[in-house]
Amino acid sequence: MTIKNLHYLSGLTITLFVGLHLFNHFISVFGAQDHIELMNTLRIFYRNIFVETILLLAVALQIISGLKLFNTNKKLAISAFDKLQIWTGLYLAIFFIIHLSAVFSGRIFLKLDTNFYFGAAGLNSFPFNLFFIPYYGLAILSFFGHVASIHNKKMEKTILGLSPKRQSIGILIFGFILTIVIFYGLTNHFNGVTIPKEYEVLIGK
Ligand code: HEM
Figure 1 (cartoon, protein in one colour):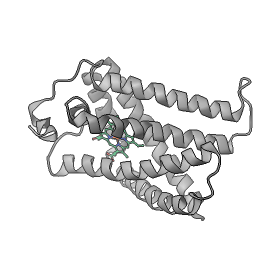
Figure 2 (figure 1 turned 45 degrees about the vertical axis):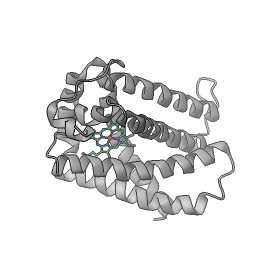
Figure 3 (figure 1 turned 135 degrees about the horizontal axis):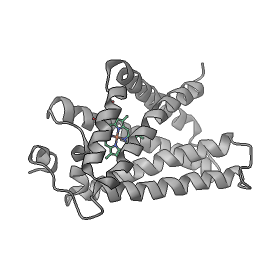
């Protein structure tokens, strides 16, 4: 199996989780409690030793193979979508390392339930939000940017009169709107979230 095939396979595995994960964040528009309840349900599927091991292995493979592909392809990327694919891939590799280190440190060392409040703490407190808004925003945009570039490369059919390129632009627009909607939910409709005492350690209190 080539590195490219491996990267594609682990990418598909991760995409399954990320689709559910972002849907979970989307549900925060209905309130923190709905987000927490859905996460508790989804955890039955992904937070067991079997699925979580596969997911973490896929992420590790994705990062290693992705960095190799970045190195070989960075000079070959000419079109805008090719460039988008390699740079969003690089960001996702860095994001995965930081995001998973944070989630597992929160769980293991800080003994926190890494739920809605774990994600929302940094987003809702100044000056931490100056880091967390671009950090999470670019992660969601990069995910859709990466998917859109691959779609543009692989898709050959016109759908509803839309060329593959236009479909890919549609994926980018969807990702952009979803990012705003998720921020709207995680910041309680931009009014801010009251962070429970046990999570204040995340924002230096
Ligand atoms: C607003 C953006 C995001 C926030 C607030 C966020 C927050 C979180 C939280 C709180 C967890 C812990 C889940 C749990 O304990 O069940 C988590 C896990 C995770 N997130 Fe995110 N996330 C965001 C975006 C992303 C994106 C864009 C990706 C991938 C492209 C991603 C990948 C993951 C992965 C792989 C896990 C580990 C799941 C596990 O093994 O338990 N996240 N995230």
